[in-house]
Image: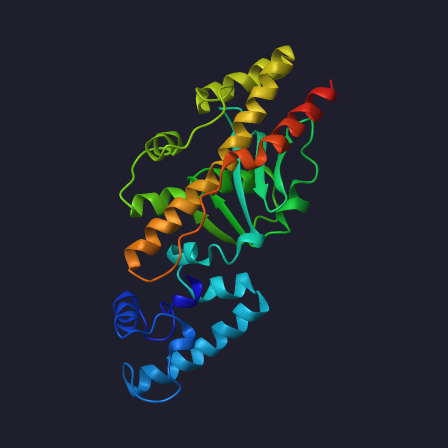
Length: 272
């Protein structure tokens, strides 16, 4: 989808982008090097801008391309930026900005970072990504992380799936949207929600209930893991709305990471 993006180039907004698509110009390489498309003034800026975007694309410069398009359209970087994208979710103690658990799902699978147990390495992992995907992260996860860990290298490009699905007419929280889309979780965490996650943390923090901690971490991991198929579905729906002949992406399946989750929980139990 990113190579079909003209919005953000000089003088090109949503309506002119649609005009270009309607003229059969559906990607950068379909823009003719001569002739009038929109107007002589706009065409000159369009062609120069496409040359710049193409260079960034060929260099794999995700951050550079993201700076050239509206944040509301950063979803278009998917799936080109797959290898530079992570999915993130956090849990807190429910009272303050104390972060109890952070789950990050990236190209090499999921990882869990737990307060007082395994928080080291979070910054190093995040530093390797250009794009972070969350659900409601603009209001919660990212501001809380910045306050809790000043200087944490959070990826600069952010896609908030709450905004993506609101744009698609889907209201409600993550769990409600998952249910409507038919996305399920393992039975161990199927009924866990944010309020229960707070209680699980305090059962660990106050009573050293290892089972509660493992359930919390598993729940947090699946909060991050489920963002991947959610993004796939949202991307496919938004692409469909454009009417462009772009192949839908395969919907990620949580079965792809069952071993990874089991390994993380096993390593957590072995610490105590």
